[in-house]
Image 1 (cartoon, rainbow, N blue to C red):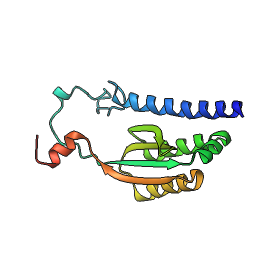
Image 2: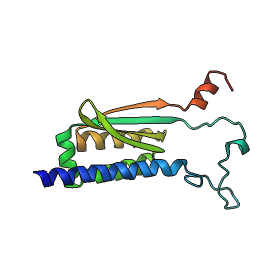
Image 3: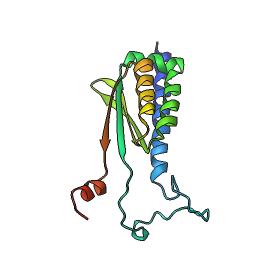
Length: 151
């Protein structure tokens, strides 16, 4: 039993580290930048960028799933498959894993995708992990300021 828990926790933490690295990569200079037509990477210095509002609509997918079902999914390899599919469909800007009410939990911040893709993600989480899923539109502080008429 001790060996099984050790393997389960190792896989869970490995997934967590991968998600954190992906999140960190997206905010590092040179990470996740648009490429200009001349092939050079876009400038990320905020002082050099125009003050045009970001039209990107962001959403947050959050879910919880029972510990027992999570242990089964980790041991069988389903957890890796689920993460791979969610990352492929949503291409999240950030992904975080945590505990909520004694259950495993995660949330992903992503640009809004097509409704069919959300259904695919929801059903994958429902059927594979017995997950409770919530989705909502989110914004960063700059988008909130702009929405409220501020600078």
